[in-house]
Length: 190
Image (tube, rainbow, N blue to C red; front, side, top):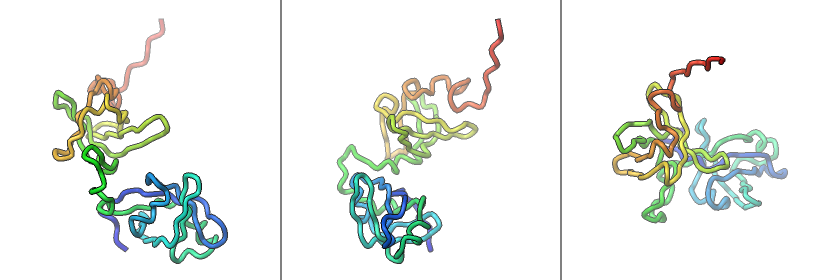
């Protein structure tokens, strides 16, 4: 079994559904029933899953895989992340100003003065808006808002994001700000 070169997370298997081996999948596609439109799904350990049937239930996809024929086999898959290769995503359907979040990973975050604030290593949404994770050498990972105020320009050709360090919450990063390893001295009692 081969590992994917540029994996994109498509969904996470949840609980078993019924007795015939179906599983509930939290799909990260816009339309949960479109999970089967991208071909076979792959797990991190190299297993390949061929989708036989997909149907939507609320905001989940109910999926039946080839070779998963009973509830016990379906329950054994719980918590498994499913991926596809990045080149399976249809780029021709995107407008000029649209992109996939997966394409942001690996971009360098720089400000107007040319200072590098790290590389985008992840995109998260904890419910209050999207956040970009930046990691730089010798620095702890930091999260910045993925907003028009914080991210001024996305330049895929040069592999860069132009950011506003104040709006991103990174101002003063070199001293005591987010991601620095320097500890602040304890406050003195008065």
